[in-house]
Image (cartoon, rainbow, N blue to C red; front, side, top):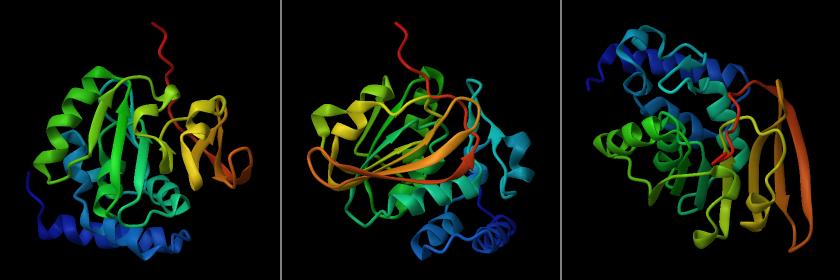
Length: 213
């Protein structure tokens, strides 16, 4: 669990890359500059940890490209103390970014292997979600709603209604929507019945799995 000067230097370079690509939120950049991403990856990939690319992790999933993590987090407009629901814990890297920024985080993972691994791993780094849940992200987490923000870290073929319903008024849902290629979409809840939708270009994600049981 080492974080060396070399790693820290590589992170600085990664932050510069993200700035060049248009990430402007200082808190997002600071979080990415601080979190040891190499610890979230299998040891064989450590050399690639600070390249702006996605990489495979357990259970046929990936750790998202740093730019994607930064962009989604920036679109979520997280403030310290915000109550955030994350759909797709995965390696825990996105969760760490949100926790580093002071979010109160609830996170759901569908793959049991990843859930068990990340549940043990995140606290070792000092990152403690309020709750980590093994379950179906499509249904959200009604008993803890409403949320200031909901972030979906896998490609959704459609927008699950429960997620929209669980947003506070003024809250945001950041979700990549589409089958093979996803459009990064933000829904801002304006009232009980009204949502403003904005789209932010194409991304590629592993699919969001619905509970088939």
